[in-house]
Length: 198
Image (cartoon, rainbow, N blue to C red):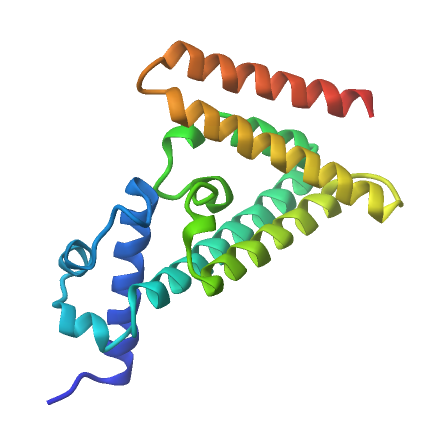
């Protein structure tokens, strides 16, 4: 007897969730299909009932991660406005915090997958690029000012600095925690100073 349509959807989601966790922790290339299916509680045959290849799974993971990240960003911006806080400053404080640095499992997918994306399939790279563009649009919309082009430039600059700072801090946090903290602290300070000068 086969599984119901609802069960098939749930099974597919279990595989995506398990894969996202492993990909975030160790990188896409470091995770093999055997390990992935075992983590999801399926056989390799069961995997192929849902995905034609690992590349197809990676694309599905990227879609999910980028959609969830965008939803969290929209929510954070709206929450900041409701609280009467500057959404950009609040985003900087959260993004460049020790908590976010250690939250690889559910932190911003833009920074988490930045090192992997160039080696992924065209479909996964497209999902990442679309998610990145959407994040930039959200950030641009959170800046004050009528000039849409200038707001977009600011969003690109801020997001690039956020991702670079966080990525560098994560890269050295185990080897040199002091340096990792210094990178976060000074990166946050420089971004906030640049915003104050605008």
